[in-house]
Image 1 (tube, rainbow, N blue to C red):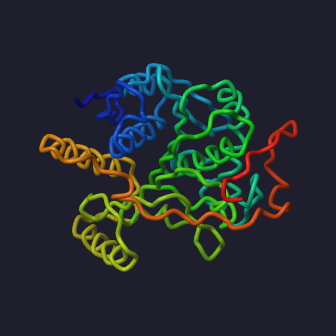
Image 2 (cartoon, helix red, strand yellow):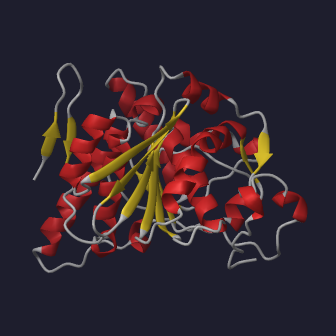
Length: 322
């Protein structure tokens, strides 16, 4: 059942998810839709976000905000979700973080985008304090800059002394976050949604050393979810761009909207629900997701550990691949 939060003078927030049990018991597409909607909810003010999150099945919401860097913690009796807020073009911090791609700083292992790391550094002490006593399954999500922040936050949680390990990470329209060593070493169960020509997913450029991590889940120009090879993906993107011109839209920008991701997932969940009535099995992640980067074959250099360590000299978890 679709639920709507409509503050006067603002765009309505439409919620399709209705969580009644543990997130781990939901299908892959249902989880993806939930995290896309919580990523959307994270754009809203605390009062509206609280109402929308409650409609989705999370009666407890807390906003963490430091100098424009923001994330929500949504909780119910079963799970804890960290949703990092994405890019707002009228927020200077977001513009600065997106544009500052020329240099990188060492994270716990490897290096990450300077601007994205700064946003997380502003928030991490508050998030760390909130998560240190968490005993629920922990999930991370975010759209755009929020996806980059969620990736770094989940990575820190994975490598830190925090007891609760991230169950999974879901990002939508996320830029590249770090270099190859960081991407390979921080081995998270990460599903990274890319909508056709979404331009944000192509920056910062690979020639500067940036790499994507996680399993790519591609949405084609028709809004259908599935894995495509490189050649077919390029063809689909070109056709999507030409198609957008006939609608007087710039595909590279319009494809970035979180509502585009949600629309594709709503259609996929509806199709899955109809198929289940005919006795078909739900869609599995392996059915639609690409391969993740291979784990490293050797431990990281000690020089890669120099910046980004936890305060107080806390030890970090070693990756299973190290």
